[in-house]
Image 1 (spheres, helix red, strand yellow):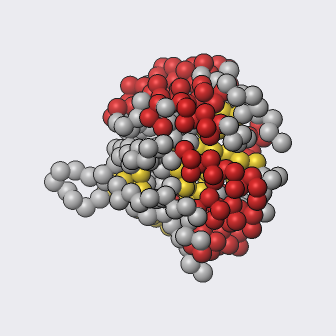
Image 2 (tube, helix red, strand yellow; image 1 turned 180 degrees about the vertical axis):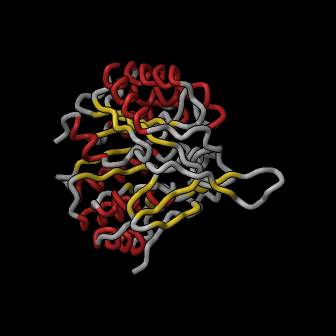
Image 3 (cartoon, rainbow, N blue to C red; image 1 turned 45 degrees about the vertical axis):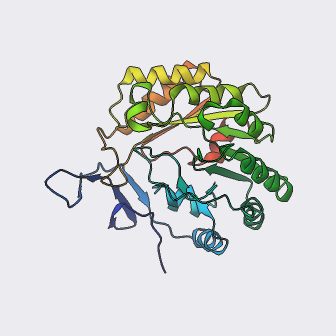
Length: 318
């Protein structure tokens, strides 16, 4: 039996768990080193038939998933459960965020067959809930918005009973393009704030804090559309900054927030400043919900799309 892991992670196998080690690099030492991770940062190995069925379908149709491209530590748990996040508009991004393991550059024209391929693959999986995301495509005139629209429409036509979550870019602050996607009526519209305001330029230099909040605010103006975002912790943010960001998200109409530990994918990415204890994640969850967020999913290995269907159900999506 073959086991597939995301690239660019130092992976240590122990018993039935896999540990994901972020890299360290110094000027003098070119070999990557790894910090000793706390015990709570471990994920079960992929083992079910469902995992390998999904892997086979993704390879057959030459599709991209953010689970693989972004080296998500939950790939085993989510695929074992039959949930995955498709990534459209290619596997290379026009931006170079310092935390993200998705490739940058070598941008190809969007595949015109991709919307139908996504829809047909989803129709074979017999899922109740699907997440679709994309790379940023600032090189395209509309940022890929029309490709997004076609993808959602094709999925709706092929899978009319399926709930759809869209994790979209900020389209460089063009809210008209965000509106185009909202008009296709996904069930959940997500856009990730990623980090606190003071770290935005360092961590994602081609993005803007205000663009992200405006994206969420635009989506929240739509009736019956659940709005969602995500923050990574461990990048050097202060607690008061996390609280400020949660308040900003509430004011922008965000209902669901995911909080997870940042893990460094490779030596060229931003270093981990701190490993956040699970107790602090629990405290942030309680704070966020007391501030007005309908649901906060918080934990070291939580990612935006982790158990996305259950997050949506927690705020009333049926």
